[in-house]
Structure formats: C-alpha cells, structure tokens
Length: 307
Image (cartoon, rainbow, N blue to C red; front, side, top):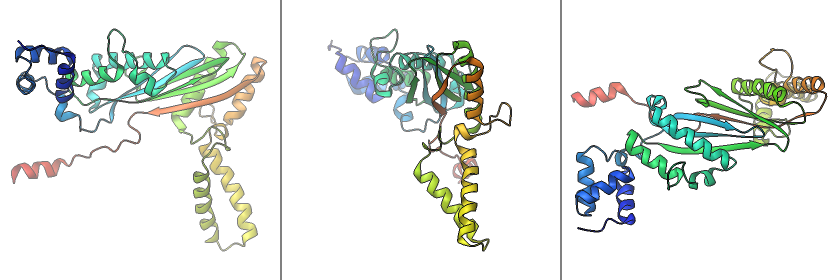
C-alpha cells in the first residue's frame, strides 16, 4: 500500500477543496492515486469546493469581539445568505474573530495563526469549511482598534446571533472616565456610525479628492446662477460647511437626539464625567461592500434552457 504523506493529502486538498480527513481517507481507499481519489471524492459528493472556488462570495457575516480597551471586526463571506444562519458557519466566524482579537485585528497575522482546536491555520480552516458546508467562502478582512486607557465599543446591526450580523461598528474612546459611562456613549456613537456612514472622523481627515470633487460640483452649480465670483466664493464656503456636516463624523447631527452635533455630544459627556473624553477612532464594516455581485438574469436562463 502506498504511503499517504502529508504532502499528498495537501495536494488532494488543494485540488478538490475537500476536508483534510476526507482527502486522507480517499487516498487510503485508492492506494495513494490522486486522480482515483479525486473521482472517489466526486462520487461521494465531497469534492465540492473545486467548482465553487471561482464563485462570488458576497454574503456571510461580519463579527465583533472586544476585551475593553481593544476590539476587532472581521468579515467572512459565503455565496448565499442562507449559510449565515448555519450554526457551523457561525461557529467558524466566531473562531476567526476570536483569533483576530488575539492578533490586534491584523489580517495577515490572523489568517496565518492557528485556528482554535486544530493544528492548522485560520485560512486552512476556512478552506476546509468550503468542502464541509458546500459553498465558496473567504476570510476577507479584519480590522482592530485599541486605546491605552478607555474603551472600544462595538455594535452589530441586523444581528444573526450575538456578535454576528451584517454590519459591524467599532468606536474607540480614550478617557479616564468610568468604563460603563464610556461604553454607553460608545454604543450610541457606534449606532450613529451605522446609520450615517461618515466618510471621515474629522474635516482634516477627509480625503482631498472628496473635498475637491465636491467643490467642483458646487462651483459649477453656483456659476449657473450667474452670480459674480466674489459672491460665488462665499456661497462655496457655506455649502462646503453643509457638506462637512453631512459626511464628517464629529460634524454630523447625532441621530439619537436629532439636534446636537456629535462633537458637542462628546463634550457634554466629558463635562458630566468630569474628565476628558477623546474620540480616538472608528471602524464601519458592512458585509459585502465593494464586492461586485453577479446579477442573475432568470428570464435569460429560462430562454436558454428552452432554445
């Protein structure tokens, strides 16, 4: 009988997308013959990942995990929303976010770290899950925030389970204030970010490209009014301030009360707490953002089948 080496198992895994133990068994059943083992896996319906690896995975879950002064958010994608309700998939994502927290949200470190309860990496665990769950999956991204003193609050919108959902937000508050006070404020600010999706935290951090693009549009609109250049300049200043209030986190109107600017909300909270509170950063992770999804043309499919 041929020796079933780790390299042989890996080769079959890479080719079939099936789990490690399934590949080992397939090779054992076929005397180490890769092609015969591949056929065996196909016959058993196990070699599922080969055809699925090229499919668009834009569904799935985002997840958050925190330990007080640090928190992380990750995104693990699947092909269909149905899989996000699968307990095995949810367990996988929880495992990934736990490893991410241990690695400060660093994507590469998390991807290469050992997955809990196994001897292989997070990346390998996701690959193995493709074969067992039956859909293409990807560990797409991981981000983290931390403060030397204070809290990083988390919020999940459209939760599928605790800490898992479709939209994740982290808000970092640096302060000596009571942790419960900071957590409550941070949670409200995170809900605000979920609702408004600001482009930057401050005006200074807004990209120059976004500013220049908006100015160009406003100047063109103002010129169409026929007003002189000196009046147009004043109009642009006022309209840019309005733009900042729409897209900059601290300049936005707080969605919780609908009237106070976010920066004033933080100032008021600091006054009540008797100590400074600094907004140190935020992260908003929305499931599938930036992924080009395939649009199915059902009518065309039916027509093709009947032609």
